[in-house]
Length: 156
Image 1 (cartoon, rainbow, N blue to C red):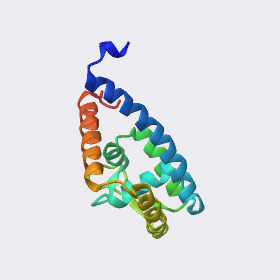
Image 2 (spheres, one colour):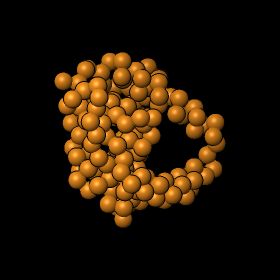
Image 3 (cartoon, one colour):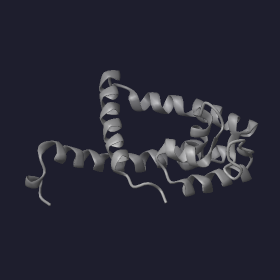
Image 4 (cartoon, rainbow, N blue to C red):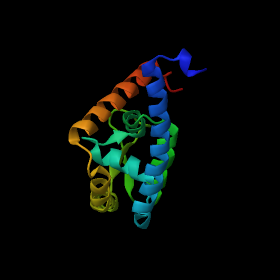
């Protein structure tokens, strides 16, 4: 498909997607480096953060849905985090098999330390960028994600 077959916004979205892919790769590499000494990877940090930010303990399927990820991948990471003592599984009064994932003291400590490490890094990334431009960028990315969510097939 050539650019002549895309309208202007379609071409811009295509270029944005390529930039997001490149950015994602760099963010994962930097995240891995930032939290390696904590026994985490970017993927583990992401799941741990989602668990920490949830208002109440949630089953893996809910965590995965909130992250836009597949349940199986999040389950694998949650199992690894449990094996290493970052999280624990608790009985779910609403579903016998779907255990709730909770942070342990080790998991809470890792989240606090990761947050402390992340602050100067993210401040350096944001230096010279306006909060307004970043808010606009976030709105555009949110709209694109919501449109993708609307057309995504249900997880099997």
